[in-house]
Picture 1 (cartoon, rainbow, N blue to C red):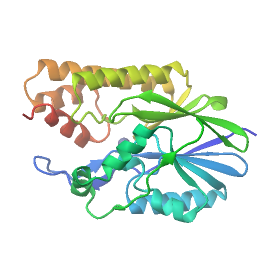
Picture 2 (picture 1 turned 120 degrees about the horizontal axis):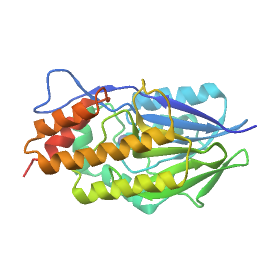
Picture 3 (picture 1 turned 90 degrees about the vertical axis):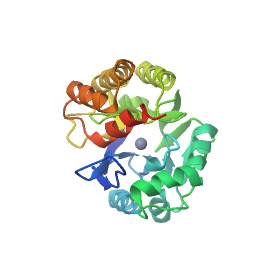
Picture 4 (picture 1 turned 60 degrees about the vertical axis):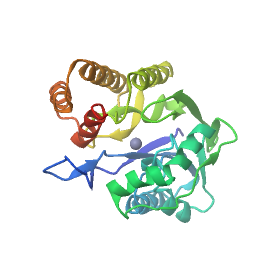
Length: 281
Ligand SMILES: [Zn+2]
């Protein structure tokens, strides 16, 4: 029996958009957590943001009846591990893991006062202020009922380092935030150099030749999880944003241009903060 791959999608969560954003409530990009399971065991990839999401995630995993052995965090941003508490309480034997010390350091940085202010600004008191930090995994290959699941370091994306989870037997990659599915990409405070790095990271995922990619942020209405479409759209999006910022003189022009090129993409708030971050002194 091969491994099953099931995806929990939070949908768009209303957040506080802050100054300049109106009139509708801002939202956080719809986020995924992926359960890779065999007959008995399971591994979770990423653990969402809010306490409510964490509780719903724990109940969803509980309903499968599988024994959760590990939670793997793809990268150290709060929206991928702050929600782990309720899951760890429901599955006390599960370990919270990351492949690389850089991921753990970024996670620790996300708990520091400076970054916490950002998370509080967006989510208020809806998240765990003292979430568990991931520990370093002892091997880059985990097993689920004997089937191998590989953790792969791919490079910088919206943060300093993104790792992915590769399930070779089903040609599937859980990409964290290196690839997006029909959602505006988190290019807040990105630079020409960080965007080049991100494009190289996407190439590394393509080198794994996946047929399926479960993106860390996925529009609930996205047609599928087809890898090639998402790799192409994520590359095009970063390249288009890079060109738009180079040639246009205001954030609003960048927003208009990107919205025209990528109509219907989820979470316009992401594009708003990304565009305005490029024109601040
Ligand atoms: Zn994210």
